Amino acid sequence: MSQMEAAIDVSKRYKISNNIRIIEHNRKYIVISVETANWIVLPTEKHLSIFKSLINKSIEETINIFVKCEDDMNCVTDVLIQLEAKKFEIFEVKRPERNGICIYLTNECNLRCPHCYMFAENKSDNELTTEEIKNILREFKKRNGAAVTFTGGEVTLRKDFLDIVVFAKKIGLLITILTNGVSWSENLVECIYPYVDEVQISIDGYDEESNSQVRGDGSFDKSLKTINNLLEKKVKVTLAITPLYEELIANKYKYISFSKNMVNKYNCSDFRVKFNYELIKGREVAVNDDLNSEYRKIINEIIEEVYPGTEENVFALNHEENYILDNCGYGGITISATGDIYFCNRIYEISSYGNVRRMSFGELYDLSSKAESISNINNLRPCNECELKFICGGGCRIRHFPQLTNVEDFDSYDFENIHSRKCTVKDKEKYYELMIKTNELLYR
Image (cartoon, rainbow, N blue to C red; front, side):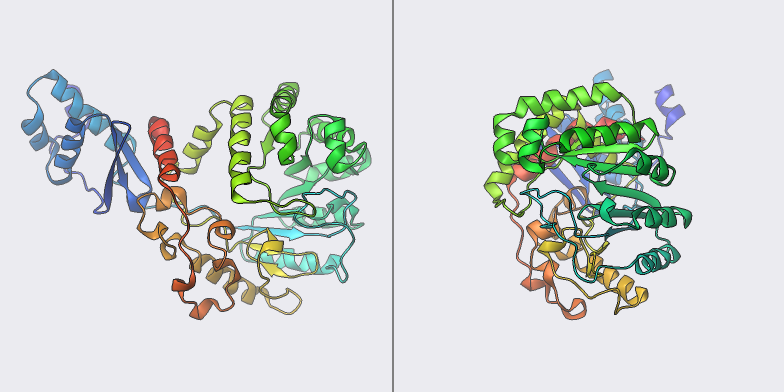
């Protein structure tokens, strides 16, 4: 008792949220504070009864009711440790910062990948000029913009690519570049590395032969050479792999072996391997939910082999420091190579909301804010009534709420027109399992 009294005043009464849900799963009780995306995990009914007592009674009163022996006191202590360690009384929440922009620099590409959702090939007519892109970056920075992602097509095919990157860094932006890594000369690496924060390089195979089936002969070794050259300059590099479905099914263990070899080769925090979790409809690729469900399952198995514990660690990172997930990121600004405005980077699946050549940045930000607002989890069914709404976030708006991503008028939209997303017991149980596994990782 003396240690407990020294740590916590037994006269304390906890201020617990009114919106508490209790879920029994695998003989444990998950107590969820819905509005703060916080939870504790209790192992027995006795622990749950102690928690319920602490909602209305002081610690001392609860001890007097429940403690008859040392084991009872241990149960009380277990509950108190969780309430304190998870800061269960804190009602202030944080949201992920929305201070990034994605700019497609060109639709021109030097590869013809069959799964390319951009159908990238030739340069589009009337692509944004150097000065137009710089003006977008200036206006973005004025409004507290912090990070820009440059993508394409293949960004290095723009003759002004280096000029644009240097300008973005000089005005204080963090820069991520998405590229296939094929046309990065040693001179380009030497010139650009001081101005770049991260480069993501895409491949699809585990060796030259498997990769060439998708990206063409010679691209594999060129991409790996670019990775090596950038890492030598201490540039952060992500290797993004999107296997075709048939290749993934047939060669799962070859992808595991290749990925492990790459991780072991560089063995540094500046390098990581990332597998995309689903296929998107592309130039020669048709997808459906069943195919992507199997695809995600195998990708998860690969990632767990390469980075054991990844799923739990990522889940825990997303829920540190009272963060809630009320959106998937929809509403963030993406600008196409010709200046069209979108609120997700999957631009070929959604509607454009204008063009930067004909709209002020103030108007653009106003529309972005409205897009973010209408796609908030509290507007979506059945998510708005779910105990996991701020833990799950509702998932991809394009995938689960397609009507939402083609709204014409944000100011007068009827939310009854948005179909409820499909959510199964299995979907929710996956989150319950993660919440149990990561509970102690989130002690603060």
